[in-house]
Image 1 (cartoon, rainbow, N blue to C red):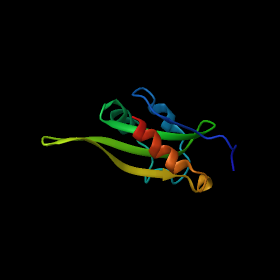
Image 2: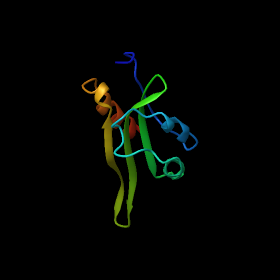
Image 3: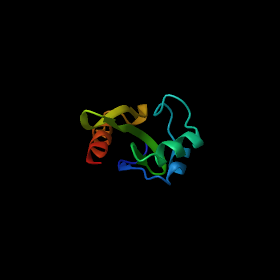
Image 4: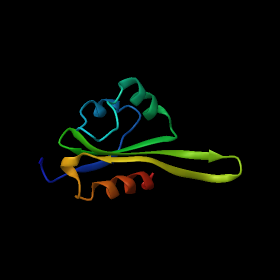
Length: 101
């Protein structure tokens, strides 16, 4: 297990390179750099990550959902935490980071 301090934060539009070092089983599939850039440059898409050192050990993705007859809503699409970092409160911290947006 890595160090105890895990930093949780939202990624900005020019931070796709952070996703070059992802622990196994955080995402369903390997991160594709071009898709990561497109996702992060869309202002309605949000990605919170948990970093242990320089490695992404958790993520939560969300989308602002807009509809003609409803207020905007945040749809939390997915939350993933590396098996090595489960049961450390990372998932709730990731969701809280998305909700702060």
